[in-house]
Length: 220
Ligand code: SAH
Image (cartoon, rainbow, N blue to C red; front, side):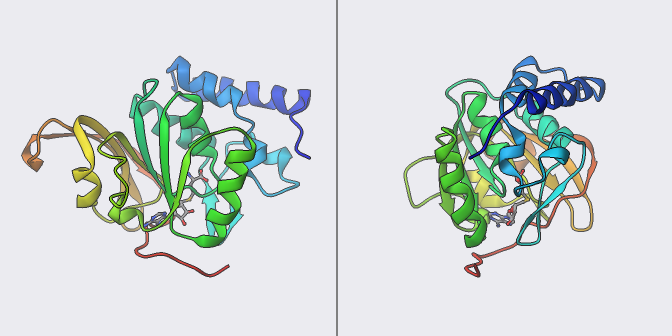
C-alpha cells in the first residue's frame, strides 16, 4: 500500500521551492508537481531520494527524469486544460501524471513492454487517466483517430526531429524535444505552418536523456 505521508508532502514542498530557485515560474506546473506524489513512481524503498534533484534508475536501463527537467519540459509545453498531449517515453509515468494534473488529455507511448506493463496499471490505480500505448514513438499514434495533438513532448533523446510527430502536431501547436546523439539540446518548436521554414525553433540548453530507440522491445 502506497502512502503519501506528511514527510513526503514536506519533501515535495521543498522540491517545489528549489524548482522556483532554478527559474521555474509557471504556477500551474509548480502546483501540479506539488500535487503528484513522485515517490509512487520510483522503485519501492526509494522514497527518500524521490524529491532530490537526481535522475533515478527505474529498471530496463531507463531513468526517471530529474524534477527540474520535468518542470522545465512541462513549463515549455504551455499546456492548457483539455488540450490533447502526445507524450513519447512513458517510462515511470511521472511526467505523464504531471501532464494529467495540468488538465491535459494525455496519450503516452512506451516502447518497452516491461515498463508499459508496470506503468499503465500504476497510472490507472492512482487515478491519472492517461491513455497508454505500447509502440514505437517515432511513428506517433496513427492507428487510432486521436490526433492531431495540441502538444507533443518527447522524454528521450531524439537524434533528429521525428517527421511523423511533427505531422501529427496541430497547426499552431508546440513540440518540446531534446535533440542530439550524445547530449541533447532542448528545443521548443512552434508549428506556425506545414513547411519546416515556418517552424519557430527556440533553444533551452543542454540535457542528457536516454536515447530514443526505434521499434518495440518485448523483453520482460
Ligand atoms: N518521462 C519518463 C522518462 C523515462 S526515460 C519518466 O519521467 O519516467 C525515457 C523513456 O523513453 C524510456 O522508458 C524509454 O524506453 C522510452 N523510449 C525510448 N525510445 C522510445 C520510442 N521510440 N518510443 C517510445 N518510447 C521510447
